[in-house]
Image (cartoon, rainbow, N blue to C red):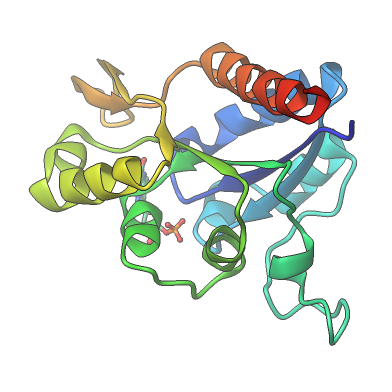
Length: 186
Ligand SMILES: Cc1cc2nc3c(=O)[nH]c(=O)nc-3n(C[C@H](O)[C@H](O)[C@H](O)COP(=O)(O)O)c2cc1C
């Protein structure tokens, strides 16, 4: 079975950690297709993800593909996993509100794949009741949230909001892929 992860990367200082995530998934023979938001590209370049994933990086929903098969619909099928790591408060809010105005949120909206969201943000953002409502809403809709954890944040403060470690994300992805494989075999 072809194992593919669509990795969404959003605008957070933690974006660099997802380079290691790509490397660790590739080591396990999992194909990775990265979608970066415009803000994510302020933190890290698409070229780094392209080199490590050995795949083109999607940064633009209006890229030419096929008239009948737009990129955000063709990129993912139900056997895939969409992982957003790091996931900003903004992107979580957009998904929870049904907004799809970039390649990442369009792909999420158009896909029935399992979705794993890995938030990273300042403690006050994470504790904001609006963010909490958005997370609760998406959790109830079947989205899997990993973290965040308490630890040292980009601001230097100790608080909740730190992205979970990459090996935790890899374990969850491998678990979900194994469950999907079992379902296919049975
Ligand atoms: C230096 C810096 C670090 C940031 N880190 C985060 C972060 O960790 N989490 C977050 O939710 N927003 C963070 N932001 C704000 C987001 O980049 C901003 O909300 C952006 O619109 C997110 O866009 P996106 O969701 O399309 O990637 C940061 C902004 C700056 C300037």
